[in-house]
Image (cartoon, rainbow, N blue to C red; front, side, top):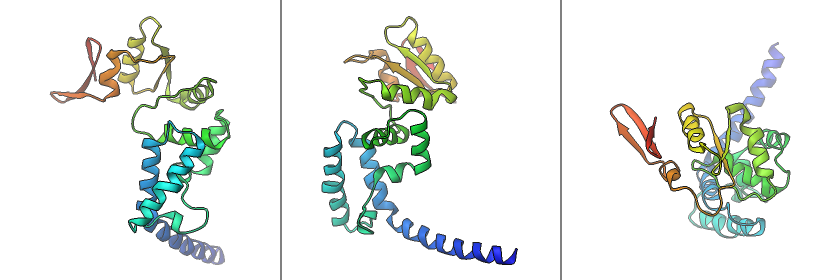
Length: 200
């Protein structure tokens, strides 16, 4: 038992050093990851690589902000910052394609604070989202369905995710307060307008 604890002490000591090194790089890595989430979505794989490694990383390093790219030849990987390998493996098991672009898109969808818009002609992203969020009570609807706003309202009240499919080129104006997160305070309640009703 004592020998086992001695080995664990050595492992913990080395892990503490690794964590201290990673802590020093956290600000720069987070800046690149946040930029990745906010801006990279519409671009193809080649342009994404050019933005991250050709523009953002040199800019962060030029400002003397510590960054993983300075720590080794592999450089900073926004996906590795946003999701660990076990999470990516779980996404793949749920049906997310294994190519780099799909994994990057999965990381963006999982980490973004706003509502992601998926342009998904092959329906791979929608199929993955349905499997990924089914345990959370995902509501799937379409703008053309009768009472779709009622399903959105119910999901908002219950705190469950909603997937609105086939939205077309324009969004229903009724959804604008939800998309803009235009909340209002009514006494102690926070409400948002959805159509002619206010939802808590």
